[in-house]
Length: 143
View (cartoon, rainbow, N blue to C red):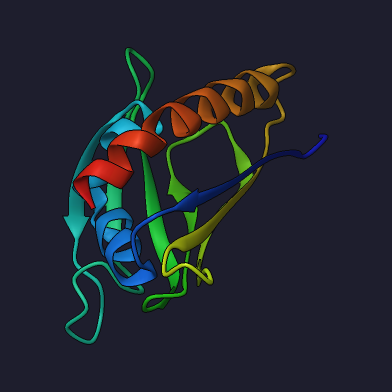
């Protein structure tokens, strides 16, 4: 089972605190992932989107799956993994947010995914790359 990687780097004009806050909200990820996103559980320690928060994603007619946030460092880093209902294995997503000299944000998004079903990971990689890249201008506007 070969791992595939999505790697996106993008510079936003807005500050890390704004971009982080926008992308930390599960519901704001619907356009980023091209999926219907439903919050299932808030995070621990009073942090709504923090560690332990869970979202359900539904992409078209495919079966839904769940992602759980495993690391949450405001406004620097969000890490999550698929925890239920997907043909993907070892799926881990990591978003990092760093300040730029001009007051904006250097956003780096890495996703690792694999599937025992031949071709699935490659298709998901292509779809995610297209969807994420296509959503970045809207993230900039809405953050």
